[in-house]
Image (cartoon, helix red, strand yellow):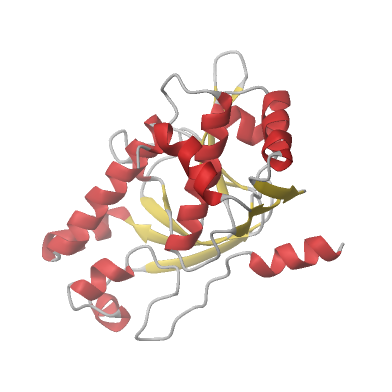
Amino acid sequence: MRTEGRARKRLPVTDDGDPLTFCSTCAFSSACLAEGFDKSQLSELHVLVLHVGPFARGEHIFREGDPFNSIAAVRAGTVKTYVVDSRGREQVQGFFLPGEVIGLNAIHGARYPANAIALDTVTLCRFSFPQMSLLATRMPGLQQHLFRLLSHDIGKASLLSGDFTADERMAAFIIAFSRRYEARGYSGSHFNLTMARTDIANYLRLASETVSRVLRRFQDEGLLRIERREVQLLDRIRLEQLASAVLRH
């Protein structure tokens, strides 16, 4: 119980900003501020940002085939995206943390090509995509930011498509999460993996038993400590060396 209490304190929680400043995890604040826009000016341009949620664990945010009209930035919690193949098997596509954007892969087809589900209590900022696109024509910095988000989304999707070992895949998964937390101002050495082991295995295209075995070996070798869903990196250098073939830097 004490471990769970400590873990909860490390969960990223955003603040709401104020009438002028953006929320602490806003996915677009840097691009807007670089163009000289604060929250009040965006309101004057009729850019509606809706705070939606909370979504409870297991609740769907959108489903495959739903009409696309908005993208959403995660404010708090973790979101999993997945599809179900013709044989009824779930295929995990990704996990999204506070400050990251879901729904970008729906732009082309005008329908969401995957399901998005809350892995814990999730709140979102929802942006009308037509309004966001119109604003991007006035703000080159925002347009470039959207392109970067799209490029990053594509890069994540292809990250694990190579012929990598189970150790390399697992190390890359852990280091990638560490870097993502650090980029948002949270601890990169002590964090929670809120998804189930089966979800991690599915995403990495490994058997659940393999994921458990690799994590046990990482612990035995002093690379990390893991208790339930709380992870502490003990030898980040060696983990980054293992992950380098997948992450490429």
